[in-house]
Length: 266
Image 1: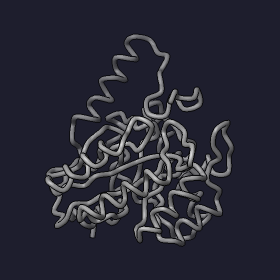
Image 2: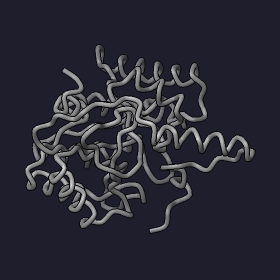
Image 3: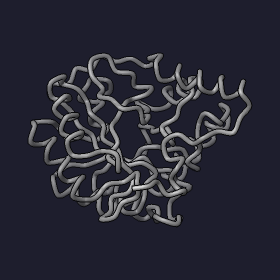
Image 4: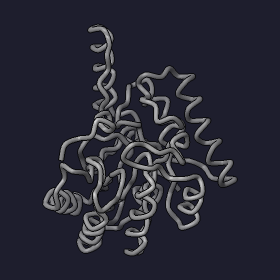
């Protein structure tokens, strides 16, 4: 399945910059990825699997949440408030009312900036303003709701913005492939995508590795539809992944619950 033009920047948008700027940007991204800045030693008693959704398209609510609830579990939805209620050529984004319903039904709402901005392109003040605006948006929908966990739009972090984000949130997730186990960097958690490039064998292998390592696997996607975009998955594929995790004895939990299970939050 070829990537629609709309979504070519979903994980790592191309930047038009001078060679020196590109070099500095690449170095900062590598430092963010390889320098652990918020370490915690995981103390979970059982392997953990979290299902998370980015942006969030309407179908992640209508299909994704329903599939999770059908298995008796809940997910984490990283939402950019500025996208709520908007329509793109191949997907409609979640409405404000459905965000409230997600929260009411026990799912976790995480922060994804307000405008879905690539944080590496923001200075400290602009990034803080994006985070403040998103928190204010959700506080206006659900008084008292605190956005505790963050996901970098496009999965891209720079070292300065990583250091800034991790002081504000319990955890921050990127899009680098991996399982979180042993000593975990909460400043840039790893995950595995559920998308057009992921088949059932890869999901089963990741879950089995999580069980062997007593780790924490974060599976992430975007839309959940019978004919998904290249960064989404079908309801059947999502359901099979949940069933496999539960069948292997994993705890399927939100990111908030996983942090409690590894002993990093009360």
